[in-house]
Image (cartoon, rainbow, N blue to C red; front, side, top):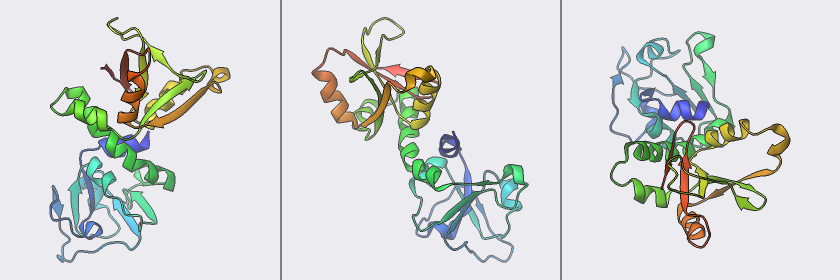
Length: 212
């Protein structure tokens, strides 16, 4: 999924003036004349230094992570392009739908990384996460046993939309109409689980899952 690829990318180069007020960038690439610039109402994003060198204009670029970039998108940008000036197969015009999904993915990816690392603060962030996805069938959340057999009925929740898409891709087409996808905040999820026969939560993403 393009949104996940953008957010998980470690280093994007963007015109520094497009993020006016930001005083810290990773790697900085200054234009030959030292004058910074930007493209009105448009964001240019470059995936590496080689792509920056092919930019239509040398505006003065600084790097930031995909999470930082997706968390700071401006509604004033009417267009967004990846690698403008590079060969056509490397250039991507971001449709409005993708841009709209980036902020949600920017919340999901850091949470997934904390869960993967079982780091400090992971449980706190799991509880407070604002927008899980859950699958509903027959009016009830989908439940499964955990792989280790310790949890008999775990509700399956997803951190991002691409994980839901992968679930639906494995469901026979004739059965997909019986599955509804809803969003739910972490605190509400825990309240619902606490008063039900469900005895666990299985948090999943596109390629990993963890029970709690």
